[in-house]
Length: 359
Image 1 (cartoon, rainbow, N blue to C red):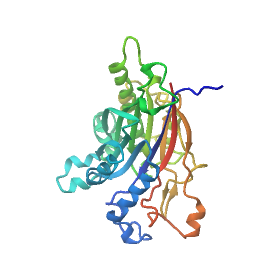
Image 2: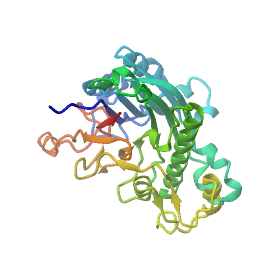
Image 3: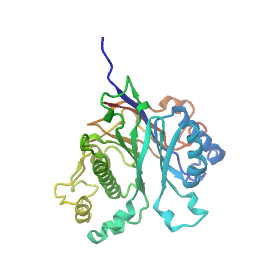
Image 4: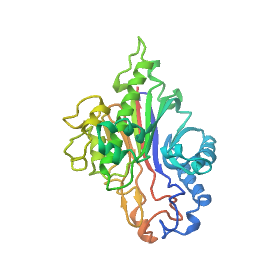
């Protein structure tokens, strides 16, 4: 008789919920105005989230007010805890305007995960620290207020099926959940690459910090012991430098999206080493989804493509599958030219994947 080994299976959602500041009739003239109003749309967004009840939820374009008054209390009642950070421009604003600034939120089911730590990543501030090394860092990256958010979680005993792990130290495994929303403009692919590099550098720094803080004489944490999930709206196609860098761990400096810009010295300073061979990261990330499975995650009248991803450390996690898109037949049947729509509350679709950890 085959005995199943202990495993931890959990689901992850990343979802750009569309900030109310952008959900206006001039931007989405094909959608009835009442379905753009947050009083209606917010309930539909929450219904979309509740339909799947994923164990980890990564949201983008969540306004400060929506996080505190809507998402957090409603999801807490469902057994979640969460953290949030607004875009960096919030530091220049006063109430009540600052409450409308959007940002990134991460939620997790407390039955499966316990909270360890969090870190806010302000790309603008990181760029400012390197302007002496690069005029393009000053002129192209510093004036973008995109952000990232890291949540360090640990699996609980309740997260494991087929019995607990044999070794008690294997019960609580570290999972870093990263959430980001990169710069939107297709004219600035170099900025997105630099922001992606900053994100991976901060994740690596967090991995090193965990190893230093939680290693014990009887259990030395290795780099490969820390699981990583990188979720978000990357505003980048699969043929982009961002996708190549994140999914392969390297990007040559002569890549057409970054070639010719003055980033070499700044990148070397951020990485702490010369980068003659290009930009690299050691996270061994793979994308859970691809255009063959999900041809689009952003569906508007003028743009339809996959730009939202869940990257995961494939050396220590297994992707069991991804939830597919709304069938194209549905859009054709109801002549849906773009979203939001009465039945689709955002211009993005949630991306959902299932993962497994083994003891």
